[in-house]
Length: 578
Image (tube, rainbow, N blue to C red; front, side, top):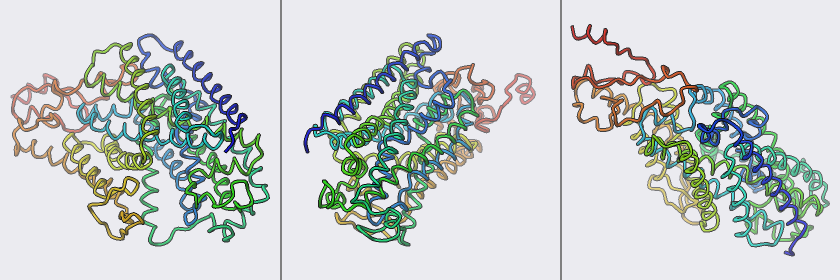
């Protein structure tokens, strides 16, 4: 492939535009808020992100390189087609469900990160455990995006993929490092506009190429390959449902989503942003769907790409840049590919910021340095942004199965964090013992189900499983949803069982080594007042902190309900003593 100077210029122009916007947003952050809440301004943008910018940045969190490339690929691949392009509908429904049920309780309590309610209810140990799958999801997602970005750029200009990945990662890390959420949000606006304009300009040219058959005909008739509308056979229906539920509910418990929710000026605004982003995800998927359909309707032997076709060459995941490169005029191709390449970073920067925010606040500050100054937290965030950015880049360059690792980690978020989030927000009475048991049961059931992308053979063979070409067994049974439900109900059952055993005196108080039931709010449990600022939450909404008065169960048991107010006034105590 010849070196294309025009393509390189297009990429440089888009990258410089995004970098300039990021630096401007960083300057805006410096002039926002007081010196005392600089870290919060970086994490949640001072909680004054408006509807327009908020809607764009929440949409761009999902609509990145993986979203548009993956949607086009699903539509293009023979045997799958539009029926298996679940991301547009799945993520849109995820945002609607998140807006209806999760955005309001999270924003109204003034949390700063997604892990705050877990540490508030279950303690810092459980917060640390839940940080692991959350971090894995964010880091592997960023690595997968950088990997796809390098491959996309290599289609435009014949340069080394490693160089393109490193440069892209450096730019994304740079503006995230200096500007935090403001830089990410405002660059998201530019990136989303680039995707929308770049793809919609390219679609008419690609569709009118002489080698492309009418996509209306190829939707239902086999011409060059199977119809691109696709179908779901009876044997695959449970797999389809399992993946669809994972997209809907597994798309909620991500720090990247709640960072936008918590940056809203009010709980109502947080809900509206979710609904706007749901609509935006559907709109932005349309050109990717059309490009996938165009790829399935093309006689590739009549193009410069030639034979074999992208599917035979195992380049189906690159169908979007291939269509733009070979079916559009040169100037349109470079504009579209340059815009898409620059826009791919819209999800990677969000993941890097999300990971550093959770570490700086929930691990460093609330677990180890509760008296850390705001300046110290800001520097911890900057260092971790750089470290996480470098780690994601290294994984993109070195790991041969980044996508497999991301699939597994996103499964863990669905199976482990989602049921925990349900319990911590809506199920009263759950405690640390139930949370740990649910965590372990969900993890075990997921790992023993196997993972073909990592060549991980299952230990539990569910009904309908079959071996693939590598003799790795594929599960047809919806075992991911089974693992999620098992984790959810295990949390509730073990929590109430532990509560009953300690309340009834079956187990002595000294066995409550996690302080989760007896003397729950002891000195070892983190002070809830450090989780949220007094100007963001009414402190009497929190569960009270009751000291241990004696070793009798009647006076030491304080875990009546997670969010109920328990009056511990001296008058009541005296009455009980009498």
